[in-house]
Length: 602
Image (tube, rainbow, N blue to C red; front, top):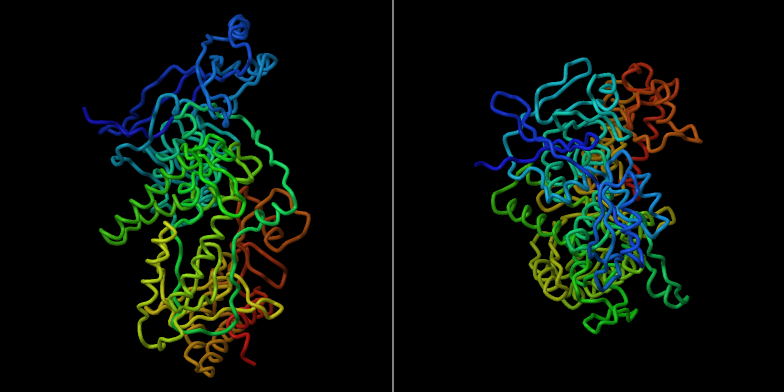
């Protein structure tokens, strides 16, 4: 019998409805399972607690199980597992908390069910019916439904499940492209690859797909580690218990220093190699087994970290367990891209996993992450500093100059090479660093020309540069070309101005500016070219920012707004007219974009 891919889980009272791909005649294909959730009670007298809790009128049944009650527990202990129907779940948890500590109360029911049953989504993939829906349309018969703004207008449709997170369909996965785009860090393509990213994250974390697209990568990181802890028999705490231990001022000075930055000297350089570590911090976590329960271990089977002298147990930790699964899957996807050639689907999947890897380090110090531990974060940064400083030393041993370095990336140049010849030292340098550190350093690109920009006081600035690579591509950080809220006409200006600047033909550079200025003043641009996209990051704003003023003109419940500057103030694009555009305001933005490139030209 052919395996069916689980598409979704719908929680309905004391039942869970498992949704599979629709049948050949396009009918829903579902099964229903009875569901009685459970939580755990940690108490020094489990037998007595079991007798008491069993008598509670709302409790279905109880049992004694052996679990690791705390993250730092070395031995399993007997705990009471309490099964309660959903209608009385929170009430019973509150009642029995007088007997001890309750845990695993706040886990979402759909996720709890998937963990207990060992369910995995989208295995195997394929066979999904996909549909797009507009406001006013009937709900299509499909496995996946894409909408724009559906979390707002679907509330009016009968049979739709409405929650604080959004609107959920009973027989399909609903993805609101307007809302899910806020959490999709590495893509906004109108849905072409959004489903691939959602499927990848859902399968890896165990979170159902219509929740995956409505939570942040950080929240998915939490679910990922819950899954790892559950698989190893640990009880998942409902809130953080780890507190930062007191430190001397000297220890704080040595440990709490952030990542290393080698600031650049502002100016233009030729033949510069940009080398990046592949997921440095996640690899450090896995390689050195950094996790709350492995810190300060005294079992003897441990590693002593440099500088601080802290001991880290070699027994596999929860955090490395969860992260390694993401790392291995991402490496597999990137290997397939190298072997099979570029694929938008595979690239979307690996970028979705990158979102989790990017935030996994920061969450180690996040107060609301149940597995967080500040000392873990300090250890990761410490090892990152050690690696980057050793990388700089290797570069100098190889006869290279380190122009700029930041956390997991270095820019090196070969003073002995001419600007016209390819530099063979960069690959050798990257290979040596990879061998010595155990973390892959990749030559990302070689810049034929690159300019490091100054900060406001004239000194070197981090993450402010632009350059042209050897294959003619423009790469930039910290200028309008890379700003998500910059109008398209500013980005087009800088795309034309940067090659003219590096050519040394400043007359041509000024002509590019004059041409875009004329287009602006003569209002020969479309409103979309002038549109500024901003996210609404909070419900209430104390200051009258431009995007807030534009949003209030026509509130629609969405988390972003596209507006333009007009002589009457900021207005939504759909409500503005081209003749109302405030040309002087856009001229100021154009002048600033010019100055970002040519700050050294009078």
